[in-house]
Length: 286
Image (cartoon, rainbow, N blue to C red):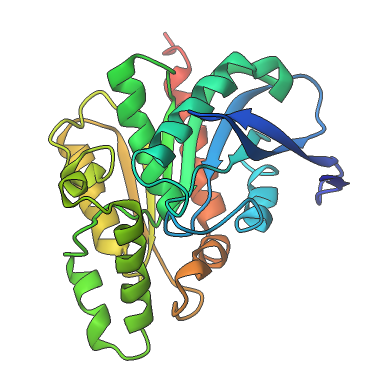
């Protein structure tokens, strides 16, 4: 796939399919880049949702087209990963970390200066994004400037209040059942459910991670675990912004979170977050 369109300000947005390298081989990916002069300083590596067992590059495509036009025109690399239906944990996490290493090594191919890499994702992809920051810290590479977690799946035990209320709501019970099935597929071995690379919320080592932006939606059953993780990051000294956004519509389908992200002013929050990172890099005035 290769396509281009003009955003509102007249710049052409180029969208190109390519292959990246995961832990065990090539993975499908998609690159979003506005046609502006020079290489871009910011690369956002994004992982799609789908509960670890489903999902592909098309899921977040409309959202990422908008994202690539915002926040100072970052380069956005959307990558797939090994689904649990093919191989369970830790395959997806290892893929995600490998994609970050590949992106750092292939910055010229991506039209990126190599200055600042952020990792992002939605739902299961946000889990992988959070996990990547732990893996990058523990393994010493790559250096990450920030993490953007949109409605992250972080609690395999489904134990938060916002999740526990779901089975009692007939119109929302399907969401709980699909989340439970997703974790059964991704973490078939019970012992893995407490591993920090599967459930960052369970980790007791959250220091020295990159600044975080965590967005939840007020009627999303994942909101409590998102906010609990934000609280733990703050307690660990990680600069963290946590926002609960107003829902644009009732969330009854698990895979509707990309739409909610678009309608919940997530783009402006992300733009402000990236702008804040720029300010942190600026030398103090005398």
